[in-house]
Image (tube, rainbow, N blue to C red; front, top):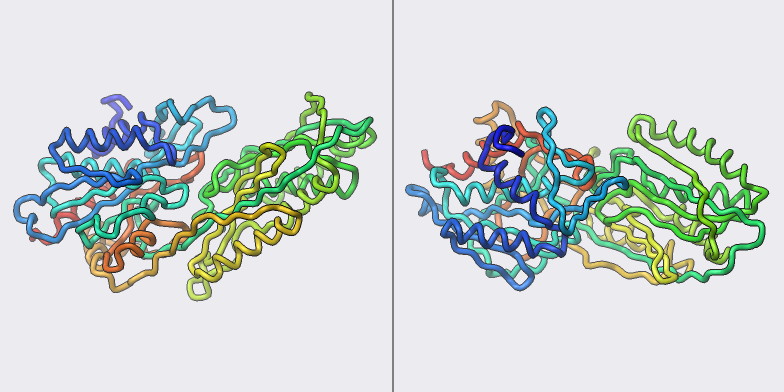
Length: 484
């Protein structure tokens, strides 16, 4: 962004622009951590880090509010690193290219990192200010949120002194989040044997692309297609009509994102060369019809330019296709009391071939612990039945809502006074660090809010400029509350 295009509030956008220049993939937060430490020292603020790399910056309260209870502003440092297949962006070294389009800021073919970079920018802007009224502050910046809430999960239970926490990681400026689902990962590793391509076989690649993808929690009930599922469905059709062998398969990238792309190299008898195209045409027609209102850029393509030397043995190839068909994906159950709220879901997130092993990555979410483990076990049984080794990732707890929360009551009052309407109080089907922090600090009073971000965890991610200004205005009023 040039100085001529910096929107309001300028202090927030200037800092956000700095953040976009710093690589900050999950588990690779060294550079953004150094930036935060330097920022604190530059503004003569006390800063400390813990053993896992979380950063805590302290600021004394302003006159008249310095005796008020300490408030915690909490965000995470890392971002989801997703890009279009045509993008040459290297998330380890390249800055994010930001583009302003009307009221929206987005990136050039990659995720933007507004989740949670814009929250970081708001917190840092408060820290840098000399004219914003606020109580004593602790600003907590956690690592590795996107890959399992690990920064929050490793917090020391005596590090934070404040007992009112404002999490700046919600993505609709009309909403307050007061509860969330818990989650876990389930990974299957399937050893496969290879054999030479049979004589008179024809090799081809089938590729699914152009899907919306999105957040595996918040977008799971949006009717979006899963690229791995579509690929498996086409391969299953062919398996029932010809002798198909898989040579390689890949799809998806992150366990918390609905896969947008997937592909496989396969071989079939030369006599069925035309069959695969005929069946693909039928499959494309049926798939486009099914997802016509959601997946407008869906593509399924065939190509045949690589001569394969080996393929997965038929028994393993067939078992893999069938297991991907059987693996549940999407909403498993809706909440009985709140019909619009997903209670339990699972995401078939990624598949890859490494060292003669097919690796299948999935994630599960539920507001009910027993149901979270039950859907994970259902996924595990699908793949263990064909000889896969199953491993379960560290699970994280949900956040039980407290509708009588003092900070919620305060925020509702301020929001109504500022904007003339009531906010929506929500429980979300996604993991928030609030649930993990609540387990460490049971007496913490918490709420989550933030500006409107669309399509997080995908290259379509964008943040609303006017919404950032609205959320900034709200945050400042929350911090000065009690002055009058």
